Length: 121
Image (cartoon, rainbow, N blue to C red; front, side):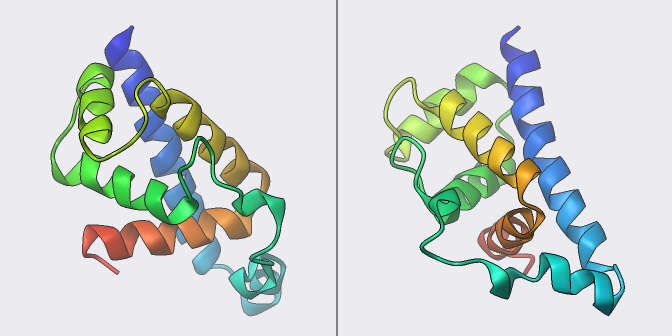
């Protein structure tokens, strides 16, 4: 169960990144619909979840990948060592993944932030 939940969280983050990468390859006409510049920084979609901003979420996800964190239990321990409130990571992860699933431009923004934090962007 623990590994399954961690796997699910990482799959959600990876799906958001993959969706963003796929959108980046779309035609210019289609891209206008998902252009990150259309995101209003005051949009409630950017409200932190459990105190974790999208930028911080991307940094934490990149850290999980860089540190080869493989189980939900170890993920919780690692993010808590990074200042995330105990017991809040599941809500943070599910919340950001839900928002990215509903707003492709947000997923693109996450992908850019993730790549930068991971040293690939």
